[in-house]
Image (cartoon, rainbow, N blue to C red; front, side, top):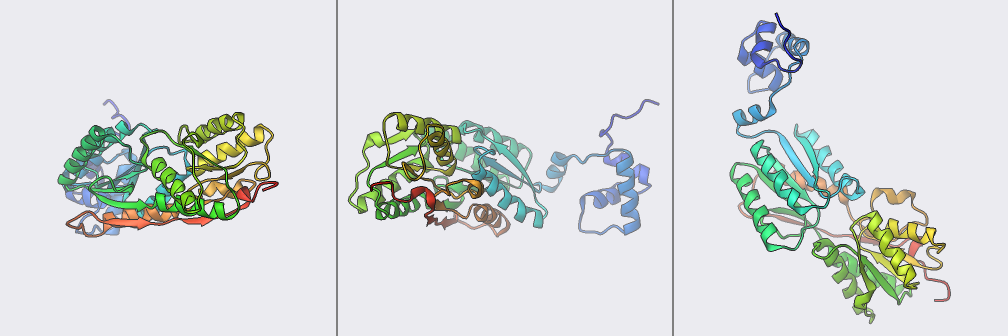
Length: 345
């Protein structure tokens, strides 16, 4: 007799191998309202191992109406901001028997739509969209339509970011945090500022730039338009923008709209022979975990990143509300070595 390919055994094969009914094999492997005795369960598990049985998750989801999978969509899994969100999501999900799958859009907003469509087809229990929304009516309309269809099929949707989609949202107060940072930097004595911003249309970047400008205005300081340099929302983007600023002769205080851009900016200063903070000051936003190893230590706005992921799962576990819920998260300014007053200032 020809051998069955590894992993192609069915649940019926496992039941026959273990000498139990199909229903008993299903309860032993997948759980259910009726418990299976320890002896029978061990027999089924051994049979499944011998046959290299792999559960058909989509089929299980179809049978139950929905699965136990939560899809987490992030912009860039390499960014410690998103990996910290993932850590918070997975910690709480594991306690409640939920499986988290992570997909990275690689900063391509249209990929979110593709992943949501896939998760709807797999009957996932929920989807969490983590990261900045982008400006663009057509893209947002299409995404909202697909998410509404996902919700109509008994799925749940949670957004971590701006309150721009009509679903439960863990909202970060970007503008307020950046404004507080600007004020405190001005109170340190800094007067000449430059911002390393993300691409046009990225709402997180936009809100942080606007907030920083607000905070400076409260201290009677203007931020010229040509003192906002745009680059990719990444470490390399921060590096490239900082190189340009150095070539332009800037020697004031730099605000990078996220920490990974700030880290890139600090590397550019080091490579160009400029000392931080004695010759140029730098601040970021998020307080990502990798800042523990950065010297000089980076001033930033501390955000409870893992807790944001935890709260997203809490929304999924709670009873669904009639209207979208919003949980606002505020940041805290943390001043460190990188923004000490410059020489001669």
